[in-house]
Image (cartoon, rainbow, N blue to C red; front, side, top):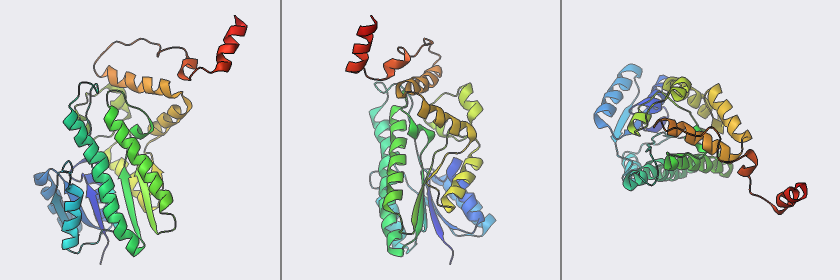
Length: 289
């Protein structure tokens, strides 16, 4: 009997591309998404094309008990999940003081709570068997603060931190946790989050199929983290080298430019202001004067 993979957010984008990759290699699929009509079409397509079992589960992950419902359904049907892919994610764009609180709580529910609950429930079963794989989809947003997408960036930082902590906890258990951190990707995500498109993002956008392939290979080889694309890797290197305040300013600059707001060329104050002043710094300035 073949192995079975559960993929959330499987009706489009990276999730759909991952489903095709798994099906190509003979994995049976459990596909979860809110868009039931689209999900059932995909299930029929994959089952017919690749001759694998495909179970579509229409489930809104913004619901508090979504993870428990999914787990209970599969337990009832005695379906073993060998690989869990937490791909579903949503976002909201705008100044935090002005955005809708309920929508932000939904972002946290999908990106953090549902992901954590599904991981907990299926990980316990994997530990009993002594084998399994988990792929959690974060973002390059996980490495930086995101003005005007503050909650979304924070949720992705959680996914990365949570996943890497689990990797250490699960050493020598036969279970691996891989975090996929894509940058801008050609999916419906930005449109659904209400994010206007800008040239610098369009130029760095990767195809969902390519991102999925890199994540898929990373998962199967047990990699800790996958950052697809040279541009994204260079961006993360720049973030590491730059003072935190400057890199946050730069991200804010990109986000503000979506609203065509004119900005000053200089971020805040001189470079040294990115660090708190110490007594030694103050004394040094006094001596010079």
